[in-house]
Image 1 (spheres, rainbow, N blue to C red):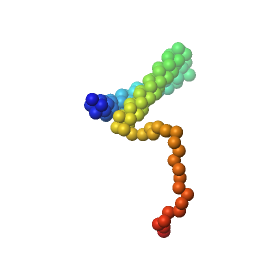
Image 2 (image 1 turned 120 degrees about the horizontal axis):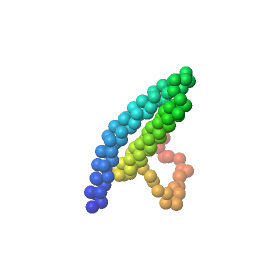
Image 3 (image 1 turned 60 degrees about the horizontal axis):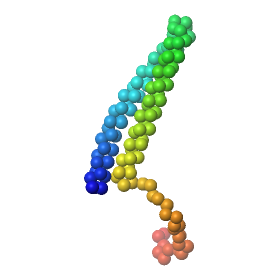
Image 4 (image 1 turned 90 degrees about the vertical axis):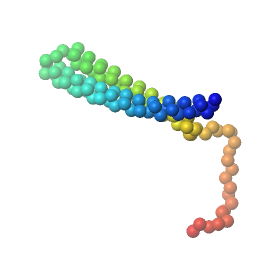
Length: 111
């Protein structure tokens, strides 16, 4: 049962990598579009074509898109950590025992 669970976790982790890559690219494109909208709204506000409300709405949209990108990236990194754990990597637990380091000189000289 444990082996099946481990294989399932690895399979899920590998599948989520591709999904997160696609999702992050789409969100990066969305942030870029919102940056363009923000710059345009700022210019229009500065020359007096649009109101401050339009400019602030563009700013809010940009911040929201950036926050979503950050959240998506965090989810991707969490998924990567879970995959790494499922593959048996990392995280050595301290047992409270200390390693003793030998102060003896090696009997064979390398140089």
